[in-house]
Length: 190
Image (cartoon, rainbow, N blue to C red; front, side, top):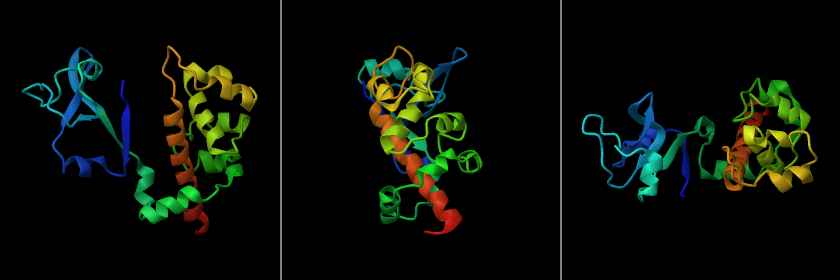
């Protein structure tokens, strides 16, 4: 199974430039547009809505590849590729993840509602931050409060419930790092 997510500061600008078909899903017994998924392949569509008439999980089984184009607001403040690379290379002030004013007050990407987790298990690396992101999900909550080496042994194992794959969690952790450094730039200058 493929799972491709691409982050944009404004996905609508991209979608205006390319031919695509919105992915479909069923909600309350009705075909509706998927929040983020699109197809860049020919796929049967509903003639009234233009939405893919084969819902996304069944479409994948039949060989169509849905790609999720995500709006990620943090990229609005990234000036260019060089700036992005500088933000990625800059070691963040990890201690700020223990500050409620910073995490909650600044609406830190993917973590502002999970300050309790950061307070209980303050990360000091991208890998630990990725594990924190994974432990937000119900399938891995049982790991909260355990030593990092124990968490690392279990956190990436597949689960019957929704869980983060290592690659997704690392990607999100890097986005958090970028957001942290953007906030620090905004508050204190670069």
